[in-house]
Amino acid sequence: MMQPSAPPASPQTTARSKVARADRWFRGLATGFGLSILGLMALLTLALFIDAWPAIRHFGLRFLTSSEWNYVDQFGALPYIWGTIYSSLLGLLLSLPVSLGVAIFLAEIASGSLRTPLSFLVEMLAAIPSVVYGLWGIFVLVPIVRTVETWLNAHFGFIPLFAGAPFGVDMFSAAVVLAIMITPTIASVSRDVLLAVPASQREAALALGATRWESIKVAFSNAWSGIVGAIILGLGRALGETMAVTMVIGNTATISFSLLSPAYSMAAVLANEFSEAVNELHIASLVTIGLLLFAVTFILNSLSRWLVGRLTARATGEGSVRV
Amino acid sequence: MNQPNQATMSALIYQRRRWTDRLMTLLTTLAVLVAVVPLFGILIYVLIQGASVINWDFFSKLPTPVGEPGGGMLNALVGSTILVVLAAAIGLPIGLFSAIYLAEYGHGRLATAIRFVTEVLNGVPSIVVGIFAYAIVVRPLHHFSALAGGIALGLMMIPTVTRTAEEMIRMVPNSLREAGLALGLPRWRVIVSIVLPTAANGIITGIMLAIARISGETAPLLFTALNNSFLSVNLLQPVSSLPVQIYTYATTPYEELHRMAWGAAFVLVMIVLVVNMVTRLLTRSGYHMHR
Image (cartoon, rainbow over all chains, first blue to last red; front, side, top):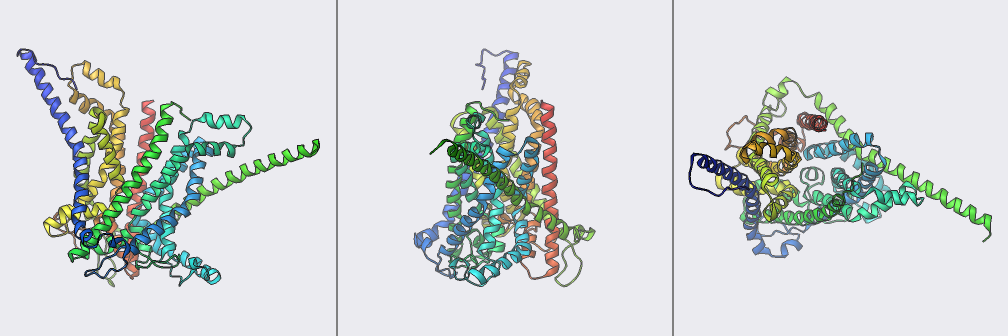
């Protein structure tokens, strides 16, 4: 920052220039470590591209549309892509009413003394390791889901959504686990976005005779784009989630709308096959799946960051703080 | 429409609006209950299933072959410790110095770029980080190793450490820096001896949370550190870890291994719980101090 220009040498100025040099060193060190993050990220992207290249060159877009995966020379990721997208969207659908309800409760309804402990509990839900969710999923959730599915299948089996044998280890379980896991993300970001809406908006609504729910609707419509950002962030989390999904989705490469059908996901196939893959094309195909996950989550996270950041920055820019 | 009729109409509408209000309040309260049920469900289950498995053998013995009673998870406990220490050795310097750069020196495009990339890194699916560690460590060395696992976990620590440390350093009042500079301290001395100690509480909190988070990570270890049923402290050999052991045991058909998995889950959940509660207390007391 401050670099004194060097006047003719005297004991004092050499001491000062020593200090300046130490300062430059320290600054260089900090900058270097900062740059190393950029370097690591570039290296990560590059490594993924290089390792994925044989599969990309060999299959091109066919990789995305083919369902054949024979471990020798045919690799198509469609069932995995389907499983990832379908399970994530189902999880999102299940999570939305709950997570938005939690966000509204925490931001608008709960009193201060209730907000802190409840926020803590919701954040704890995000801190539990995903493999523990998977363990719990296998031994607690799956039997429950199986019971529900048996009933659904017996009564509504004619609907394609509930067709098939109720195994429990299937799309439905995966969606439920994902819903539980992304709820804290969506809830806490939406809560922050709602809290960033100036109190004056709600007060104006209340002063016009609105009920509390109507004033919440006003705040909600103001925060809408940020809440979309929170939802996108949750979707990104769901798409990349590995362990819990791998443990309950059934790991069978099928494409079906049925909730009762076992399925497979992109992250799950990586978890199951990567350490044992020896065939170069097989490895490259798996890395391509990783690259796809990376690209999609990158886009979703950037979008979400932009949507959420815009709102919260505007709110703090106005200096409106709601206590 | 005549006068009284209109009055009853508006009264009805008002009633409806009040009932909607009550209904929605009830529904959001219900949503909180629904969200918290799985948390308690998991905690209680892990406590009940896990606590019965935890004994001295669990911490001091190696796994026995299936069918033989007894045995513990010493290999996984030692392995997890090695991995976390390695991760910290990689993630902490990068995270802390980057935070110093961002908070003290960073302006303009470079700082924005670093902040953005840190956020991106935070969102990268953990299994993709594993692929990266495989590409840069496992493949060149030709075998799975603790080193590769540690690097993968270290990479995952960076965003949490950088972000919290930057925020904490920024919260240090400028007057403290100015006082130091006015006394003739060079800038780096001000940072090292004044700013960092002042922000230490918050920074340590961030580090602890980051460590708690990575100690439960499984996906990046599956094809880096792999697993090892023996005790190993060699950084260039595969090493076991608690989360990978949970995954392996949970997917076998053996009842006793399931019990061991619950025991390991108990240990992991305890780490996460304790760290989160302690950091909460730390930050709260810190907050009051600064007031």
